Image 1 (cartoon, rainbow, N blue to C red):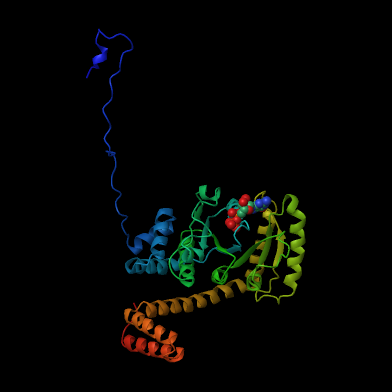
Image 2 (image 1 turned 135 degrees about the vertical axis):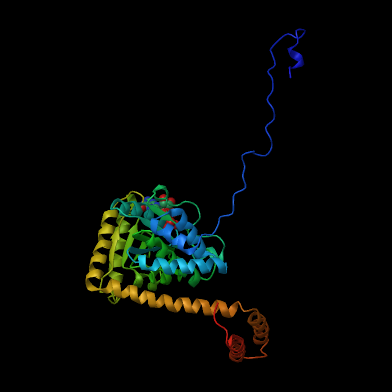
Length: 368
Ligand code: GDP
């Protein structure tokens, strides 16, 4: 429509025609279809082809608590197993701020230069307890996350530490079947999660910092004992001397530990993740380790032991959740807990009675 002020009796600027108001709702908007579930065979086919999208969806099923998802996931894992195992599995730990993300970014690019593919997985027990994770959801590995040969997956969130770890372990199987021949499993060096990571990797790398005075404080002896390599990060600038000093201290401390079952004496190196100094040396150490344990046969022995460990872990996990998720047991536990707290029954008798009831309930039932 012509604007009235464009008539001759008005002088001045011409008023342009307006435009029709666009609709409030985007006409191109389509509700996203709910992602359909494939059959186990289709997942396996996609995974073996190295299809990242199918792999991610399969990992989501592994992490899901929905029984239907779990059923497919277990079948997928079973079918991928014959294609798994062909990778170097490396656990990386360190307290928050030690430089794990920075280091994994450069270590990752370093291994990718040699060819192959890399999957970075995480086990973060904090995500369950505090609902916020220390290892973070933000993209922490900036360069690696842009690399098409890298698959980065944050920690599964739900469940007990054992459950979370088991899911990561199952994810390793899928990644290996998809052709990822380098697997990093990252965890925070503050709790029991190291034991879980240790039981699924071939090499365990501990990232340490210097310059905090007493270097050995704050890391649990157990973690140091598990480490196949200790690397002191931030050996740059003013911090270089302190890093070298820490290196000597760690070497001395390691002498006090008995030689680990691998027969490999853990090495202590300094490097800088940020300035990318000493990265090749760290990987030379890791290569030396793999040569050593493959020659001695320890590599294969450890993997067999890990299989055994995970069989028992899986059984324990299932037994526990079957017990605690039984509605009648839940109620009975409530009652018994109150009785124990009020000193009406001893903890032993209460436990015994709850277990007896559980076994009664389980008579003739097969596990789900
Ligand atoms: P994370 O919590 O273990 O993942 O640690 P980050 O990788 O996020 O690093 C924590 C902080 O240390 C960041 O501000 C990094 O920039 C810094 N940082 C990491 N590596 C180095 C290093 O080699 N040298 C120096 N000077 N700073 C570093």
